[in-house]
Length: 227
Image 1: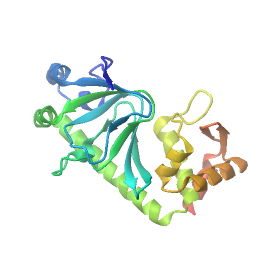
Image 2: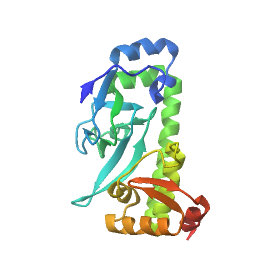
Image 3: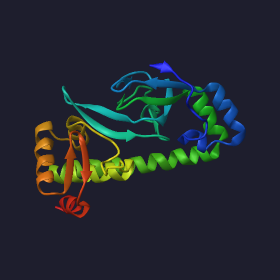
Image 4: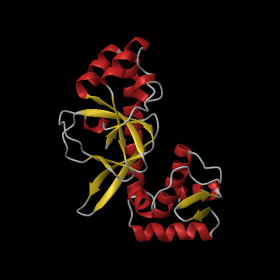
């Protein structure tokens, strides 16, 4: 990890919801940090001392699942926040965060973040809305893990990734994941996800180029999520 100065005080979830008069204070208290691809930002069980906002890059938020497996909870891309799951009474992270690609993040310590909530009503309301949306997404994911077949979860994950991260100029999903990360996202084994990705490719629903995946038939993938 190293400090950088790329944050523009305009793009992230936090700055967009603060009063203009509060932005100079943000500039004084922020720490702009850079993480290499694959680098751990914080680890499950670590003490919470602040909150992070993504300026560029993508971070995966994940949790231990058994002794050797992990479950990916969500991805945070440019403009989003992460580390907020440790803001409860127990000031220890219940999750870990790892940079999926070179990551530029803005860090604010808890004292300044809490002071900002008291001053900026728009920030407080935005945070409440974000928590409500994330709670609904978590409840849907738990329902899908319990009731949806793995192939349907893979199809749904691909559709959601394209919705959240868009497409490259060549039509591939804008976030490239390893098959292991995709397995951790849908709550299945690597072998099972690899087999279903191969089947979806053979059925003409997706196109593959190494780790890159393009959706060729969205309706076909949606049909699997309904089974």
